[in-house]
Length: 124
Image (cartoon, rainbow, N blue to C red; front, side):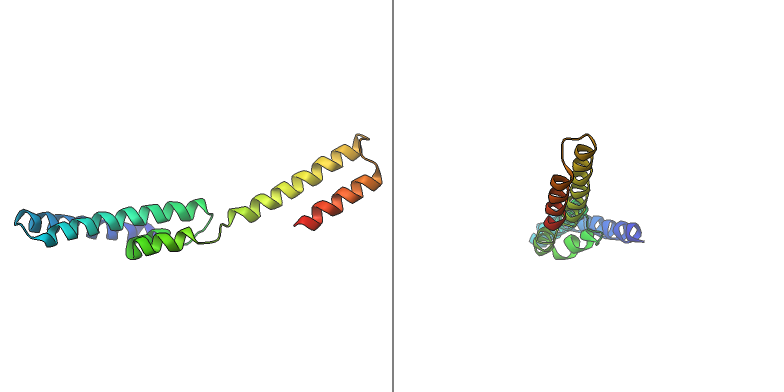
């Protein structure tokens, strides 16, 4: 469904762009404003969508950027990054696996293993 709306907005922007070309060829300033608005909307939409993707957010960043422009860019830039929690969990379990292997190989005693395990679990 989102792809459909993005396609519609892209078509509308292209139409506005060509209307702007028509007005600008007649010498009207409004034509340049329309062309800039059409291009800017698509650019801000794409940038915001990419930023949301990199932050692990499933929201519609394209629509935020398309309709709000620079304000949408600021909103997306200040959104919380969802990827940090996932990497923390993976690293915590990786550390637990490492100390388990050290215990099994005899490098760590049972007391050292429990102390390190509790330290890792307290960090999360």
